Amino acid sequence: MREISLKVAATSRILIESGLSRALSGAFAGREAFTAAAAFVVTDENVSPLYLDRVAAGLQSMGWRVASRTLPPGEQTKSFDSLLTLYKDFFDQKLDRSSIVVALGGGVIGDLTGFAAATYMRGTRLLQVPTTLLAQVDAAIGGKVAVNHLGIKNSIGTFYQPELVIIDPEVLSTLPGSELPNGFAEISKAALVADKDLFEILEKDDSLPALPGHEMLEEIIYRAVAVKVNVVQQDERESGRRRVLNFGHTIGHALEESSAFEGLSHGEAVAVGMVLETRLARLLKVTDAQLADRIEALLARLGFKVHLHGASPEDIARLTYLDKKAKGSRLVFALPVKLGSVEVFEDVDPAALRRVLEEAAS
Ligand SMILES: NC(=O)c1ccc[n+]([C@@H]2O[C@H](COP(=O)([O-])OP(=O)(O)OC[C@H]3O[C@@H](n4cnc5c(N)ncnc54)[C@H](O)[C@@H]3O)[C@@H](O)[C@H]2O)c1
Ligand SMILES: [Zn+2]
Image (cartoon, rainbow, N blue to C red; front, side, top):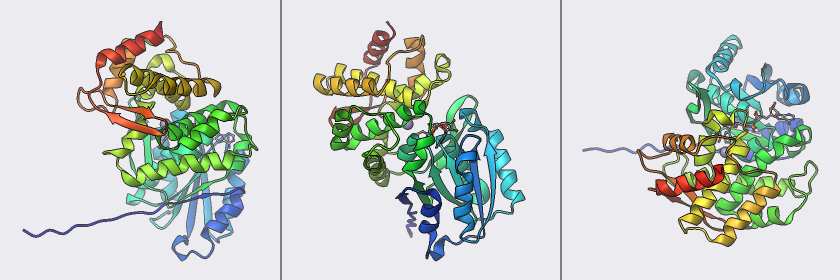
C-alpha cells in the first residue's frame, strides 16, 4: 500500500477598523496576492444607499473594475432565486476565479454571497464586509455559507473561508436599534462558550445594548470574534469542538423553523434557546442554579423575553430532533457547565427537554 496525505489550509485575515474605504485600501495596500482585475459587490436595499459608494471607492482606488447587485433585504433573499441572479451577474461581468466577490451587509447577504462565491467556477475570492452586529461577531466569521431551501434554513450550503473580513464598528451607527439585541445574543453566547471576562463586561454594563459610540464596543466585538476564531480553528467542519457554538441554537433553530415564530429574528430565537437550554442544563444538574440565574438575568436585561409564542412544546421537540446536528434519534445539546465553558452532551433525556418546553409554554 502507498499513502499520500494532502493537507490544505486557508487563512482568513480579520481586520477590525473604523472607516470602510480606508480600511479596504489599507487592507490591500502592498499585498501582491490581493490584486484582482474585477470586484463584484453584493448588498441589500438598506445598506446600498449607505455604504456601497464607499466600498466601491475603496475597491476602485486599487484600479479594479467594480460592479454590484442590490437585492431586497430580509431572510427571503437567502434563496436559490437570488443565487441564480448572482451567477448570471458574475457571468455577465466575466468574473473569473481571481475576481473578488464582496458581501456588504448582514448575515443574509453574507451567507448568500459566500455560497455564490464558493460555488461559482468552484470558488472565487471572497471578502466579507459585515454591517450588522450579528454578522460582525458571528455570521461573517468561520466560513459557514448557505441558502434556505424547501422551507428549511441553511439547508443547502458549504464551508468557505473569506480571504478577508473587514469589520467597521462605525457602520453600526445606522443599524436600526431593534437589530442590536440580535448581535448581543451571539456575543453573550461567545462569552458563555469561552470568555468569562466578556460575560462580566456585559453583566456589569447597564447601558447595553445601547449603541453606537459605546466605548467598549470594539473590545466587545474583538472578544466575541476571538472566541469564534479559536473554536473554528480547532474544528472548522463542526465534527467536534465547533459544536459548542450550537449553545442556544438547537432549540433556537427549532423555534425559527416553527411557523408560530414567523418573523422571529435569529438572535431572538437563539436567546430564547439559550435560556431554555440553560434550564435543561439545570434540570440535568450540569449547571448550577447561580450560573443559570446569571444567564437568564443578562438575557432579560438585553431585552429578550422567554416565551414560545403559542408554538406547542410537541412541535418544538419534534423540530429539535430534526435539527441537522441531531445524531439519529439522539438528542445532542451544547450546555453551559460553568461560566465561560460549554460542553456537548449526547443522548440528552427527551423527558427533560419536554418538561422544560412545557414549563415555558404554560
Ligand atoms: N454563517 C453563519 O455562521 C451565521 C451565523 C449567524 C447567523 N447567520 C445568518 O445570518 C442571518 C441574519 O443576519 P442579520 O441579523 O445580520 O440580518 P440581515 O442580514 O437580515 O440584516 C438585518 C437588517 O439590517 C439591515 N442592515 C444591515 N446593516 C445595516 C446598517 N449598517 N445600517 C442599516 N441597516 C442595516 C438589513 O438591510 C436588514 O434589513 C440569518 O440568515 C442567519 O441564518 C449565519
Ligand atoms: Zn447564531
